[in-house]
Each structure stands twice: as structure tokens, then as C-alpha cells.
Amino acid sequence: FVLPTDEAVPVALRGMKLGQTVSNIRSKGYFVEGNEQRLAELEALGFIWDSKEFVFRQQVLPALRWYQAAFGHLDVPQAFVLPTDEAVPVALRGMKLGQTVSNIRSKGYFVEGNEQRLAELEALGFIWDSKEFVFRQQVLPALRWYQAAFGHLDVPQAFVLPTDE
Image (cartoon, rainbow, N blue to C red; front, side, top):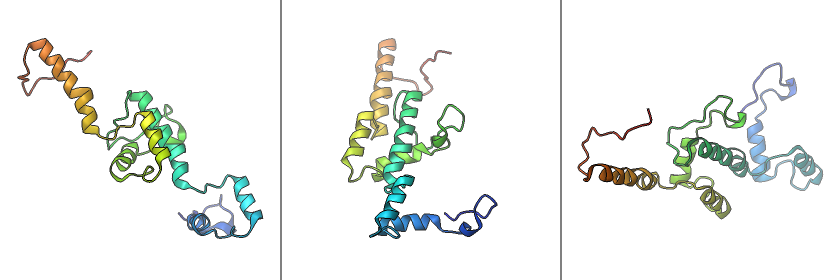
């Protein structure tokens, strides 16, 4: 990410590769190795040393909690994007939560090698296997309902369960 050239950015900073600089500070200790004063200044600013931890705590967990409150479960569809309206906290608006959940499920993002984050997702009720969740929470109960209502399970293909409408 390169700082944009506009009037809000001081002339001396325009074009600075801040993202690369921050990456070098985090991974290689540039500017701070052996310099306690600079390290203290970054700490005082609230410098984020672990971006993955920050994103997990400040975006992923709050977004999952929002979704769970809104929908009653954590079986987030892959295409789900958090709304951009005022019902969603500003920092989460437009977040591709479905893609994030898919990456956690299939690639271990945020949890690989991190038992604490894994335990937090488990405690939240994270759905690791969407097919298993849908089968247990929807398919089996719907079949049981149908069988109780009609006495058999020869469900016509066009059959749709009734709604409140």
C-alpha cells in the first residue's frame, strides 16, 4: 500500500511505502532493533506487531458475533458480505465474512498452530463442516416433520415446507 498523493498527506511522506516499512519493522526489527527509545515510541503509538492477531480480534471475532446475533448460527455462506448499513459496526462494514470463514475452514487461516484461537472459535460455536450442520439442523428435522405429517418419506421433488407467510 503506497500512501496516496493528495493534499492531506504531508509532502515529505508522499509515495512512502508504509506497508513495506511496517512489514520490515515487524519481521526484521528495522528501526527498532537495539533501540529501546524507538521501540517505546512505537508501543506508545499502539503499533500492531501481530497483524493476524489484530485482524482476528478486531474483525473476525466481532464479525462472527454479529452474524450469530443476526442469524442465530455460524454457518456463514461463502458469498456472505457484511452489510454496509448502520446496523453493522463501521470497522466491519463490507467485510467478506463468508470468504474469511471458508479460508478458516479449508486452509486453517488464523487457527493453524494457534490453539487459543481455535478454542475461541469452538466456544463461539463455529461451524467447521457446513454440510454436516445443514444435515443435522435442517435436513433431518425436516424429514422427521414430513414423516410425522404425512406418514412416509416419499417427498415429492416440488415439495416446499410451509412458511409463516
